[in-house]
Image (cartoon, rainbow, N blue to C red; front, side, top):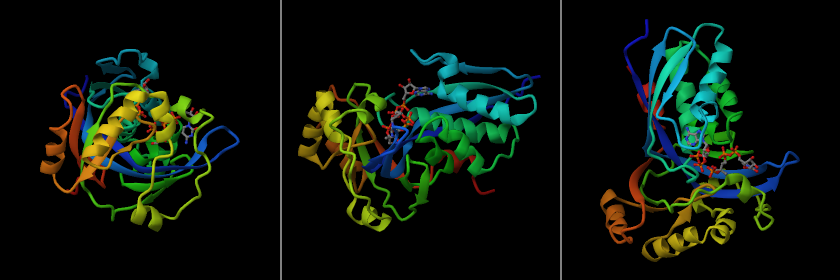
Length: 285
Ligand SMILES: C[C@@](CO)(OP(=O)(O)O)[C@H](O)COP(=O)(O)OP(=O)(O)OC[C@H]1O[C@@H](n2ccc(N)nc2=O)[C@H](O)[C@@H]1O
Ligand SMILES: Nc1ncnc2c1ncn2[C@@H]1O[C@H](COP(=O)(O)OP(=O)(O)O)[C@@H](O)[C@H]1O
């Protein structure tokens, strides 16, 4: 018999507060230095345990086949490790734009790993889940760990930075889908930024090395940056398309949001150093 209770868990967005590319590895991947912070905003996933080995997911994402969906890929990785019957019905409330640099797919995958590990009582450790997650994408481990972090390597070497301020952000989402692989393979990409230490990153922030190439390839993003910069200092997250500005209060962020042209898609959200997924799953009892 199928369990009738649903476990609802957020899959938050992330921002890259800075993103430096410090080199290219022999396998073609790039070494980065980045500061990840979560937003109290994102997708929500609902999980219900089944007594067979089936996985279901509704709704489907247009253009993403079932077995390619990062939610299903994450669940399959756990099924392979389980050694027992494990199935689930999964519902997805998708809020985050795809290819927006907000890490929606990676966050969905991490929430699936964390939630099904609980629901199926697999008792995999955070290290094991982060290692599994890395096989799905470079951003998955930070969502699995659930702590704002300075990341190095391809994003998997994480040092928690609980001292980051937690401002309000205005996030503007130009309606274009940026292909991460295309940005990293572009010949004009800055790939030789000198490494800095965490203290410097926290004190000075930094730039986004992908921004220049992205704004050439996707002029809509450059236009949005120019416009938001007139109202408040703005930067791109990840490989775009979304851009953001930080504010001391929600009211200030909303005031600037209200000045944007009506056709702009934007939202206001609080930066948080603990993932909302962890807040729900590992609530102190
Ligand atoms: C650069 C970041 C910063 O957060 O950008 P966003 O994707 O979030 O915008 C991420 O690390 C992206 O991670 P993710 O989106 O999971 O990328 P992946 O699927 O692992 O990689 C997509 C492609 O980008 C290139 N790639 C990605 C990450 C990296 N450090 N070096 C690379 O060269 C590779 O060609 C890879 O095939
Ligand atoms: N559950 C999912 N949510 C979003 N994207 C997914 C998902 N599963 C697979 N994908 C694929 O991953 C790509 C990157 O999506 P996403 O992680 O949202 O972008 P970004 O890393 O730029 O924030 C999408 O274009 C889509 O093809």
